[in-house]
Image 1 (tube, rainbow, N blue to C red):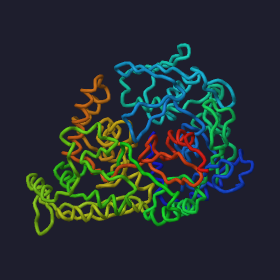
Image 2: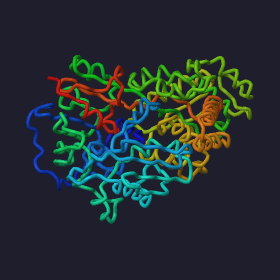
Image 3: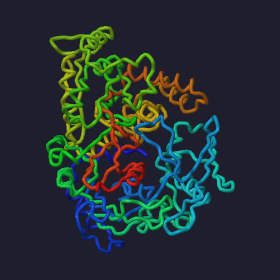
Image 4: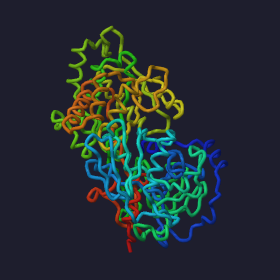
Length: 561
């Protein structure tokens, strides 16, 4: 599942009216006593926090908008069949509820063998029927199938579950094995699962919901968890109203684990406890970048887009806009490194994103653009200008746009920056009502998800008709669409490599968007009370606590003393 909408929310400024409405609508039916007894780490407590404002009591694991998803605690209650590492996508997934899984060579069939020890928190065994029920459930309720996986056949064969598909699922295999499994004996009787709040969640994970309030959610360790006892006995999630409040809580030690964008992190966080305050923001295979509206002139001209891409100073964006928190894009294909090293085409192995103003001017001249009085004129003689748009309050994006504005001025291009509300911006992006905008992409086990989000003609919509799932720039390239299809349906690695190399060449030569930063899967955490966190030296999992692998992290933690 994509984490980027939530990553964006970390930066957004919460509207007071929304917070009041949320607070008024929150239910605390499960709340008993949420008073804190002792500081962070006392009696096995681990404290977590996010700047998402008051939450509504909803623990539906299938809803990306539920409190369970927003705060991240669904990953402690519900478990996947296998655990993948998004910062090391080439690594084999780790067995979890399934001890083994086998795909047929064309990726249209997978057979799961379940761990016979697995059981639900209420003591009932977790069986093949539960797994089959979950996949049939997603097949029936498409609104809850967030990844859009085209489930077809679902069968139980003894203690195994067999899934069959009409087309290759090579690009979806990690999404399938990471699917949260729910108990049939509870969910089979749910009449409206799309709106089911699931206020007493029962999963197979090591934690159960103890109490809920709009501000704080507490989970307690499941007795007799099937994988063994946990060192962390209680998880306490607090929802803060904004980045400032969450940063203060981190700096004081009140919160031990979070992911908050803080421009002055060295001063605001690290310096408060240099020994214990840590952060690590590795990247997966998703990015942020400047999307062009390629259906508008002159941005339909690939030479103009490529020339602009050649002068953007990614290092300045990395240092000034992203405060070195978001990994720098150093390859023009947009593929983040080192996660994407295995996928780089040979011709781009040594390529860099170092600005090349002279080279960009040459490309423009060859394409019929001319400098006239310091202004760039397109082949028709019209001055090139554009408006950058992004939501007000998204300071990293606004700073990034300012840097790009200065960069392209070297080519004689005038630009202005317009800010909007997040809602208005979202509507305009979906409808193609923009010149250029900074936006994120999807991420996955390979760069396919990123490129598909940017270039897939299957997602192409005309200006004015909403595109909800990608290709916001209306990029119309039959070659890219074919390469994406070839990659997804390939039965051999050689064919996939050919298709991936084609996509990289299109990205570099036609620049449907300008990659500006890698999308991190990072976090801030404290080693004062707990040790065993993932690090650059031991990257066993991405550190962000809303990822499925957060469960693996908690199980790996031990008391510092």
